[in-house]
Length: 129
Image: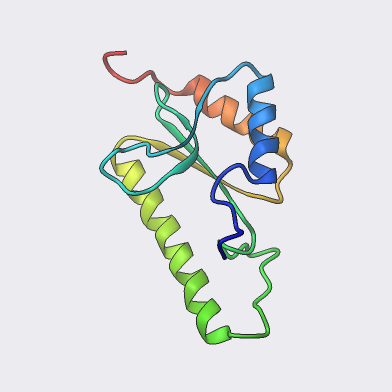
């Protein structure tokens, strides 16, 4: 599993290019809330928008996840824990005043970028900024 990237994945790079082409600037692979040990793929600090691009395998996509034939006793709880952690992260960031956007890696990057842009442009600015 060491070969699996936690950032700069192909789907993430495609979304980042599309968002950048729309004129939006963001931070990459940072903690939206410093005290929470969770890293978002794209962070729009002033708009308080955190974006996660979830891989279909690692996050258990309902459309594309196929349970492995081997070592099921390991993988089934592993993917379930990942999904639980995703829900906990979303809840924690939302309660801290962040808007959380989650997309699957199979989604069209231009559609995803458009939805991100709409969320960022309609978000109120961070107080005091």
